[in-house]
Length: 297
Image 1: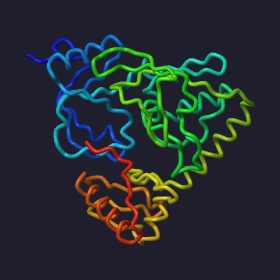
Image 2: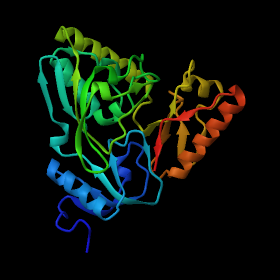
Image 3: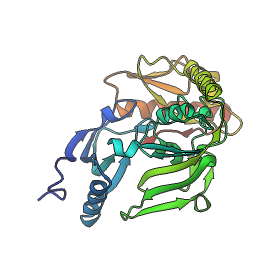
Image 4: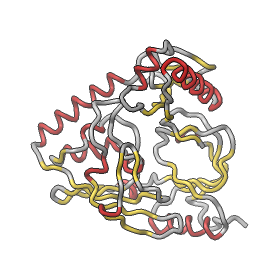
C-alpha cells in the first residue's frame, strides 16, 4: 500500500526532475507532491513523517543541481496559486513563499512600494530569497538583503506544525538566515511608500543592468559561485583565463564568467567537473577559495 493512498491526484511517483531546474539536468523523484491547499500540504507532510519518509521542498530550481539518480523521499512543489497569493495593505505586502520573485517586485512597484528593486532580474521564489537573504550582489549593484524588510514569516516545521516567526525571532546576515524550516508559507514585508512612476522606472533600469550582465538565454544557465569578500567571482574567473573553459556540454560563459552555459544532453558530472576545475585554478592562482552558489542533491 502506498503511503500516499488517496492522494494520487497530487502525489506522483518517479517524476523526472530536470524540467524543474534552471539547468535542466537531474534524475527522478521517488514521490513528487503538488498540493493545491494547505490541508493537502499538511496531509502529505504528516503521511511522510508517519512513514519515516524524507521530505524536501523544491522551489524554482534556479540554484539547484540534481545528480542523475533517484531522489528518495517526497519533494514538495508549491506550484498552486494559493502559495503565490499577494495582498497589499498600506505599506505591508503579504505574499506566498512560492511566488516568483520578479512578479512580486513588479506588484510592489505597481502599488508604489519601494525596497525590492535591487533584486529584480534574479531568478527564484520569495521563499528562496528569504531563506538566503538575497541581496542582489554579484549580478547587480547589490544592497542590503531582503531580510531587512521582513515583519514576520509563516512557516511549516519539519514536524508539520504551522508557526509564525516574528521579526525578533529571525536572524538575517550576509546571504543567510535562520529560516531553515521545511516550508516558507508566506511573509509580511514592510516596504516604503513612494512615487509609483519613479519606482517602476528604477525597477526597469535595474532590470536592464542585470540582464546586460547575464549571458543571453540561448542555453540553460547556472549562476555558480558566491563572491568572496572583497572580490567578484566573475572577475577572478576571467582573470584566470577560464572564460570559455569547457567540460563536455558545459562551459564557462564568455559573457559573464560566473555563469555556466549548459547545453541539452549535459550531465551533472560535467557540471561538477567544470566547477572543480574552476575552484582549483582560482585557489592555485589567487589563493582564494570559491564557495558554490549551487545546492547539490
